[in-house]
Length: 395
Image (cartoon, rainbow, N blue to C red):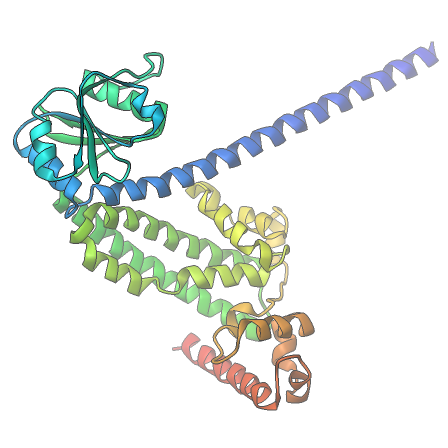
């Protein structure tokens, strides 16, 4: 009897183990699917930015669309000439002529769809009927917009629908639906975003200055690193939003673009160097890790333990208190006339920034690619940088 009970317990444990393994496999599959979906969303966002540039104010296509809008007419325009699109085309007639806003306006007087080349430089067909798969779901009510959404979903191509009654231009690309807004509205949003960017950039600069001071004092914790990464990624998110506004503004967005470039000229580079300095995987994974942060939701980014986990220090709250030591990529890049191969040799020889700072001129001179003059320059450069950081920190 005891033997049977023992066997039953053993069997039950084995079954439980199998179930746990099965659950873990399911969780891993789910995580993998979510990562792929996030990566796909980022790619779609980059692709749609190109679409906004294509229909931005000042472009021939936008001029043609505005002419149709002012005339209170409707239109259905497909920007793409792949075989997949042509298979959906019925009727109409072949034009195959250069694109001009006037030509587009005249052809829009007919009810059918207009087919443009993928670069929108030629008008290929006019007055055609599009026959997408009716099984593709659509949230639109009008026939023109429903057809546009289905064609975009089926082919992944840009389709433009202009509503005659509402005088609205709607863009469809893949699963993305976007209504073009008035320039004054976009400019207002862009200016508001720039004000937010200035504040976030100021916070990022303070966090970076504090990190630099702690690096010289050898007091850096995982928390300090995660805070800088978090602030840097927040800045980059506002920049990405502004890029959409700039793309949509076209020629009207020149001043906005100049302001953004001046504000964040070095943020992306600094963020990458911070990751290079502290990620466990080494500098080769830094770009990939930075891309991972870009796919996160705001809630995921606000949790510093998530950043700690990706950097390789674990997701426990206690991991934020761990002392860490920078390799030195970020600060060594600030020294004048110091090539990247020499920086790599320094890091390979000394291991981290503190060892480089403490090294004598003779020890620096022994590193490949560094002579006595360069060794003295590195030593003096790091000393001046430390003095400047300490001065800025307490001002």
